[in-house]
Length: 242
Ligand code: F6R
Image 1 (cartoon, rainbow, N blue to C red):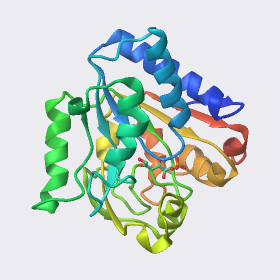
Image 2 (cartoon, rainbow, N blue to C red):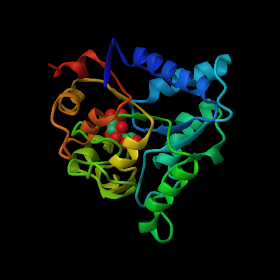
Image 3 (cartoon, protein in one colour):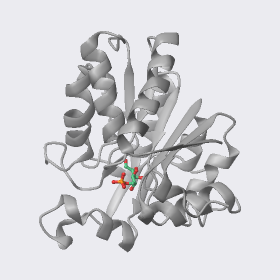
Image 4 (cartoon, rainbow, N blue to C red):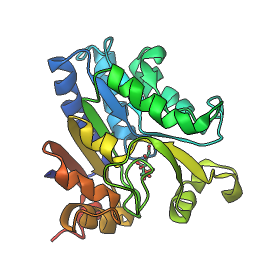
């Protein structure tokens, strides 16, 4: 992967958003893979600014979220559906019907993963996938131990992830125990990957993902197997690199 070290998340957002802009200009019908969490927020904000300034036209853009909490209804403010609506769909002015999240509720929930894979395939696959990384090395919610060829499916959240995400809920007990996430195989099929990470809390995961062995113990290490991957990190997240 190409590694770009930036000063801060704001600079990362502007670098990432120019990669997005280039992709969208090349292919106005681009299919984006969308991460939630704190990491992509400066990228989404920079993209929204470019849309407002009229420098990119996102009217043909479609999107697929990486993951969703299991058992959290879409209208819950912390469902990833709500987060994607707030942070991406509304600020960029995307058509909400052209942005999908895996469903975390409803009938035959064990089928939801295969349904999502079918939707991605129907859209022609994901062109550009933005990723954050968990402090334990997860990407999407593929926790350590996830198969490198996995597709969208239900997974248990690691205790570390539930702790890391407790900030979004009113109490730690409220954090869901399970999720539905694109698999590592799904992520690897995206035609371009963009992984962002900020802060000392991510340094160990970044070093293991970029310089350790490719292994299901560090799901983010799949980035090494992708032919077109860019990593944008700040100095603190880069501190563990050789
Ligand atoms: C979010 C996701 C996760 C996050 C990761 C980092 O859709 O799939 O892998 O990217 O947990 O989260 P933040 O960015 O909040 O540090």
